Length: 167
Image 1: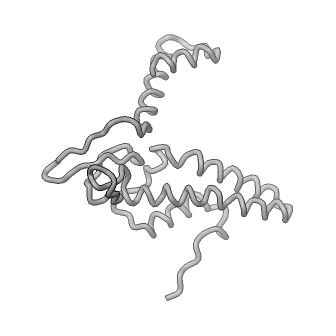
Image 2: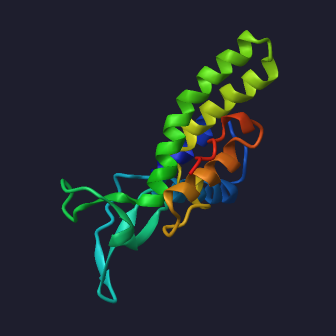
Image 3: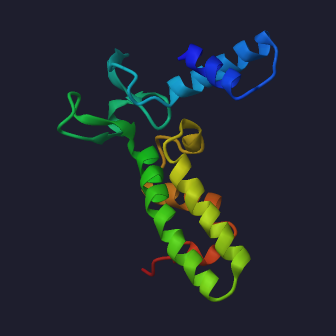
């Protein structure tokens, strides 16, 4: 893959030193490796705890924080519950914000509409990137993950945030 990266840089007419090409190539290669779901990350035991690779965080977690999946060899998916909740939230909201954007266009609020279109694209394009999940830890509840997502992505759109549930 390193050769492909170097060829892409050369074909695009990038004019940089060989040292810089090597540095950029290594950084991109590491990024692709960290975000590759096809890469093999076998489970292992650590202090009596089975550790499973979390493709969302790009690191190993204890098996008990992973999403159950009976069809998998280890009985869990390759992502933790908290990170999967953020992924699901981003996936659902990436399409939902488009409908809100159309309402803003209809109401001639073009700037808000454009921001929402951009936000929808961003959510869709970044939901599978490891760095997207840096602010999510395995001990977070589903409710906390949603709150963090709303604070992170809906800061400019408080009307899109979840309404507090009455008791």
